[in-house]
Length: 358
Image 1: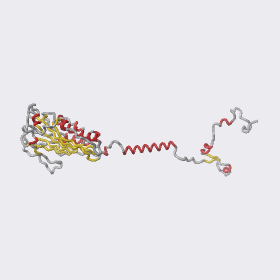
Image 2: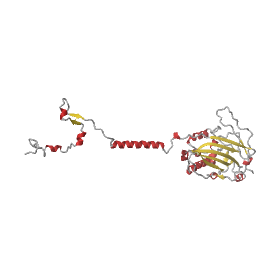
Image 3: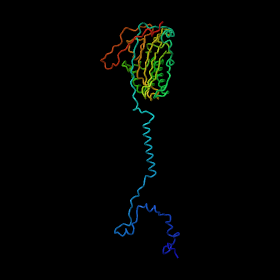
Image 4: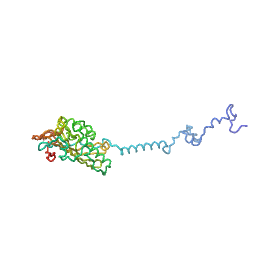
């Protein structure tokens, strides 16, 4: 006798273990039924005419964001926050935010001698009887002062500023190759990039306009007229560093440099004479300059003699050599109506006390 669950006619022939075995892997639990988009109407609801047998349910509303969506939102928030932080605290300053370099303003004053320029064959004798007797040669005459940090700059930053200024003085006034008309790239690379164009214009088109004199940037002689009688150039002076503001260091320098000179082509035992240059320079450094070890040279005041006031000192200094006198010609005049004239012609007198007493 068959079980109540068996078909009335019995199990169909050839069916494996009964007809329900085919659907035993499908489980219609309560969750599955509730999630179904189609739902059958009840018998009472189907009594109504033209009522369809099933109805479509609205999609189930999720109670909140899925885990994947939540992770994605968090990642976007973190990325946005990082971008904002790096924009505010970026370790490198953008060029747009940097203060542009000021053009160098300079004055070059020739000092004319009162009489004939003293000379001697013995260079040691010249120095020994001059105010430069105690000066040192080369970089030894440009020592660094004691250094200490400022309110906004560390010890290392102050030392870097002083070393850069010292390097500029040595290269621009104590390098025999530079002062006798040689390559000036070693000086140029120490300047802030914003001043290098002005430097180049001065080298190629010097002018006595207060901004484009070669001799405002460096000491320069005409090798066709004079040569160094002694490559060991004597110097003495000071460097001082101070904080100009929270983002700027300033270094001021005041050095007197003395050159032993002979006429170009003269014999080695020809008389030599001394030529003195006093340079007062003011450098400015921001943090980018300190990082690159460059300087912004903002002011240069130069006094040099013995030389004639009748010649333009912009491209070269024009030393008067042993036995020569300054002509009584007045210095070049200044036309106040000329729009390209920004500085008046300057000239001074070299004191006898600044000359060797032989």
